[in-house]
Length: 276
Image (cartoon, rainbow, N blue to C red; front, side, top):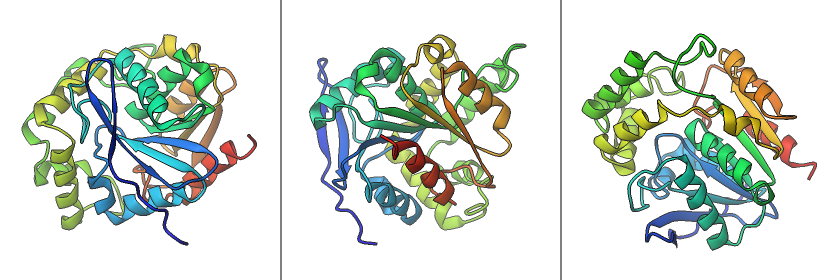
């Protein structure tokens, strides 16, 4: 496989002067936007072989657009709410000349894409959401979330540990491919520091704890694929049930991070995209 050329870091400027960093990889006929969850830096991601290999594989059949959300990585400004993320995505698509891309995101990255598709159905060919959720707060009607105390405790851990190797070791501890890997923990700690400050990341985490996506999900009319690993089935299936005609795919894997054991994930994405 010949690796796709990785473009230089470019910037799309919003109406309020924020510069949104992005890179374009590959030149396929299908545009594909990719967004991580808490982490992001359009330059640091290429330093780690599993991430680089995963993104380069996506770019073999698409024009892949990786981008840093407002207040993350190489993008300026401070983290915004969901409405601001949607506005930023519209600015980014206009800057790169992408009329109807596929939007592929993990956790909050996928949530922002779903919100964009709901607000601008004509500007997205499809949404692929890995790690889908409707809210973070646990309620009698939503048993998969965390309690308010648990959410706050995690935010405090972010404030005190983000960017440190001990925190990174715990962060990757459930990932079989790299659990106990000192070099992997060192990279993730480095990646965290490149993403943003502990205070900014914790503030964003607290904000997501109050987000209820139910109204957004029920209004999505863009073709949507919800992908989950075994173990997260009930929550992901519930989210898929809220989006009209959403497809639901369950993958057998012990890995959660999408760039490990990524073959089945990429195959599911390509099967979803191929018919169009």
